[in-house]
Image (tube, rainbow, N blue to C red; front, side, top):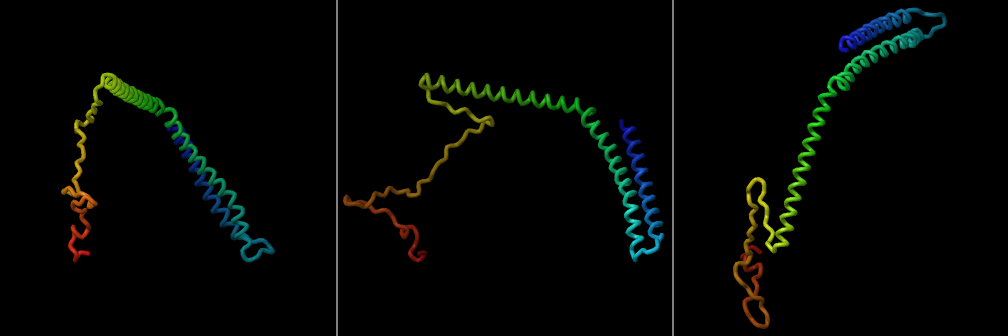
Length: 171
């Protein structure tokens, strides 16, 4: 297939090159040819109109050469590489299926464990993470280390104000 498409491409590129040369020749000769009653740029406009048709042929030949190359690309993509892509897709599908089955099995096991624990009256147990690192319970620091009671009718020590924590010069 490569030889055939290369031959098509080379033939169309050669045709395009010849059309380009022919267009240049036609344009230069028609620019030099004057007809009675021509204006200042009439010969140039006429030459451009006629040579434009040859330029279209050149463009069409280049497009045909590109299509020949695209033919080879489509052949490789749709015929040569297809079995390999299908094998890869089947392997990916099988991996996804196995992962789903494994995940579903884990969920079922966890659900059954919770059910048996709740039926037996056991407190739920945390399942350790896969990495083996236990999650630490956060410890909070008390912002007021002293026990202050509210100053009310019963007396007691009043709650501190902001001035007690910062000096008066900071305010």
